[in-house]
Structures are given as structure tokens and as C-alpha cells.
Image (cartoon, rainbow, N blue to C red; front, side):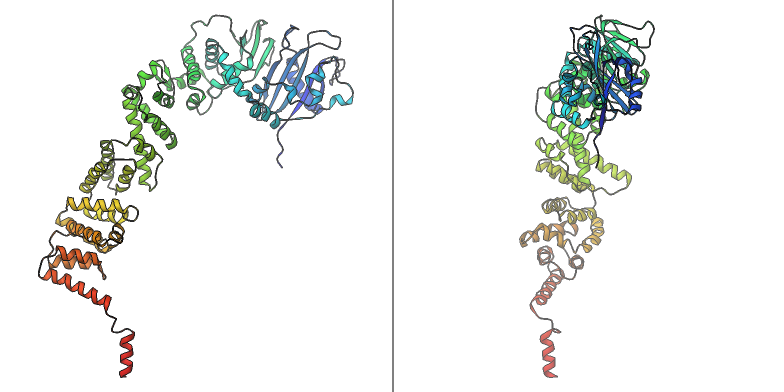
Length: 610
């Protein structure tokens, strides 16, 4: 049985004698074993004090730390000691596996009432009574089931969604300056002075924007009196009057000062912030690098890669999704309507899966005032969809793109050009090319009948008679009507004498397409006769002499189709040619009507005379 991840819980507050044996703010109750308590205390004891001295402000402060595969989450609440003096603290410390105590859980915990999920003895309401726990029971706390906490905070209370909404309260200028700082020095410590919104909201906004773009441990402290201590989290939030280190490595950004011109990455940071707020998380997700970037040079190269035009930072898929709805800025609209957009759009479309391309094509198929402005892009989307549908059809399958194309059938010229290009490529490589499935695909996309007939004419003109006979035989198994139309077009087109001689091998192997005609004219003798007449006119000639008749009968096998014999009677010349056909008909008649002389009746007669 797999056990869910659990976190240990420790409570710090003022005590005459803490679990460490001292009279100060220290651990008074815990679920940790002694050795683990000492290890964690060495890591966090400088951070367990409350965030401020102002007794009128009782909002908690939060700290999130990571140490390799372990993490800690602290909630610090201003409190009075047992003598009623202010300046003390009540701090809850959760420690556990970092993969379960991740950034999302830490941020959500900053927005929750911990008394909803803490063990009863450790709840704030039970501890802020002026008395610290005493006795042996004070050292025993139950561990916290992290899956229960995660389910409560993320799945039931949707606290991350609340943070998503709160992110809009972060001033755009402040968020831009912070994003610039992170891109200039990925992973470097950063202090925010006088943030107008809670620290966890700012961290959530930054992580959403750059969490998978630049390196960093994304640890934080939301309310600190000073950023002068050592071993602080990456992000620290302090009041405007907070003490700062005289010398330190932390960069400070004061939310109360003007934005200023910024460095070379400021403009990119502003575009990135606006893109996220305008297009949402999905747009950023498509742009994220395969792994977080570690230097400013790497960040700059990444930004250049996604700068599709001057002043335009975006992924093209977002632009393509927004354009049919008229949701583009003037800069975006100008770019997408230009020829310069076509090569990158072509590459972007090539990366999309069929389902995504189908949704995109469906959106673009709705006529809007913007359609003419983006005509070139629209044509590129339709061409990509047609090519994908053809690729799938050539593999013997059907694509969902066919149904979307049917809503607005492709231009016949576009289909013709694509077929010509594919046939030319096949001819240049000297390989066989099966075009009939593509014609069937074009028919399923709603291409008009006359356009399909024209394409069939192209097919007949480019392929030799032998290949066409094989195609008619092959597709008659699955699309007899299409096979019949191809035969009719071939008969209209005609063929030369040499091609006719070459076709006899194929005709012999198929017994003069006997099976194909049966499939194309099931239980319809008159139609079968007509199809055989077309086949004869195409492959042998309109008026047949004795030698041609004998060649056809030889190709038709031991039992020629009655419909073929009827067609031969109609097209053969009088004289020896007709007599050859009549002899075959008479032979077939008696074979059907008279018993075999060597059969049972003949045997009985022989026995009687014997």
C-alpha cells in the first residue's frame, strides 16, 4: 500500500523552557524526532520571529524555503508573550518532501486559514491564549497529510484561481521591473520594498510569467522587517522603512519609486507582461524554453527568437487563434496581414497536431470583416489542412480535417496544384504514386463533381493504361462508383496501340476486370455490358476483328463473363470475329445446359450395356 506524503509540524513561540532547553522563542511542540528538530532549527531559527512589531497589524507573514529534496513552510503571526508583552511570535513550521511541498502548495497556503487543516492542538485558536504547552504531551504532534491539505487548498477551495485573479492587482510597471530584474540576473536574490499587494500574489505573478523561463528556487518571505539577514529566500518583501544591509548581494526594487527607463531588457519585459495579461497562460506556455535559462545572454536570445516583428513579442499560434475574433492589436494585425508573416506561419502550422489545426481552420472558416485582411494566412491554413488530409488519405486512413474542409471546400485550383506537385515529386524520384485515394479525399472534402471530373482527366492523362487498369480494379473493392467514373473517363480519353498491348498482361491477370465489373454493376446486366463496352473501346478498340476477339477471349479466362460476351457481339465485325464470339457463347450455353457425358448418367448407361 502506497502511503501519501506527510509533513512534520513544529510550533515556535515564547516559552520559559522550549524543547531546546532555553527560555526564549523556540520550538514548544513538534512531530519531529530530536535529531531532525535540531537540524531544522539550525536552518530556520533566524526566521521564526514575527514580521513586524506593530501590534495593530496581525496579518501573518509566510516563508517558503527549499533545502535539496526538503522544503519548509512557515506562518508567522505577531503575538504576546505569557506576560502580555508584544513583539513575540507564534510560528507554525511545516517541513517535508519538496516535491509534495511545492511552490503552488506554498502559495495557496498563504491564502488559507491554517486552522482548517492543522491538528487541533496546534491551531492558532488553541495557542494564542497566553499559555505555552507544557508537560510531556507538548512534545507530541501528529504529522500533516499533504494530500489532504493539497485537496483542500487547491482542489476544493481553488486558492490558486484566487491568486490568478489577484495578480491583476499587481501594477504593470512593478511587475515589469521585477521581470526585468529576474531576466537580467536569473536566480539572483531580490527584495521588494513597499509592495502594494501581498507578497504571495507578486511571487505567483512572477512564477506564472517566468517560472519555467529562468532558473531560481522560487522561495519567498512575504513580510519581513529586514532583508539584512543571511540565508534569506530568493524573494523577500519588506516595508518601506525596513532595515537594509549596508553591503549585500540582494537587488532592491522600491515599489514606491518611479519606474525609470530601465535597461535593455525592460522593453521585452513589458511586452512579456502585456502578452500574459492579454493572451493568458497558454500563450506563454508555447514560448517557454525546454529548460530554464541561466544567463542574461540566454534570456536575450530566447526573447529574440520570439520577437516576430519590431515591438511584437508573441507566439504565432496565439495570433492565429485571436485573429478570426478581431482580438489583435494594431501591431499584431499589421504583421499577420503582411507577406513577411507567411514563412513563420508556415513553420508554426507544421508544428500543430491535426486536432489543433482543425479547430484553427474551423475558426478561420467563419466569415468575418478581418478575413480579407488576413487572406494570405487563411489560404496557408487551408493549404496546410489539405496537405495533412492528403497525407492521411495516402496512408489509407481518414483525417478529421476532411470534415472541417467540407464546411468550406478547397479551391479546385489548389487541389490540382497540390496533386500536380505530388505527382511531379514522385516522378522525379522514380517511385509509384497512388493518386486515387487523394481524389477520394478531395471528394470527401466537398469538392464539386465537375471539379473532380477535371481532376480525373488530369489523372488519366498522366498515368499509363496499365496503372489505370490496376487502379480501377483496386478501388472497385471500396469505392465502386469512383472506379466506374474513372473507367468512363479513361474510355473517353482513349489510348494508343502500344499502351493497349502493354495492358494485356494486367487484363489477363484480372480476367478482363471481371471481378471489378461485378462490383461496379452488382445485379445489373445492362450496366455490366455497358462497362465492358467502355473497357473494350479503351483497351482494344471500338470495332474488333478476329484476332482482337481471340485476344480478349484469351484474357477473359476459361469462363468469360456473359456480359463481356454480349459486349463483344455488339462491337465485333461480321464474319470470323462474330463467329468466334458466337462459338464461345454456344459453348458456354451447352456447358450450362447439358450434363457432362462422363458424369453420373453416362456412367449408368455404360454400366447397362456392360
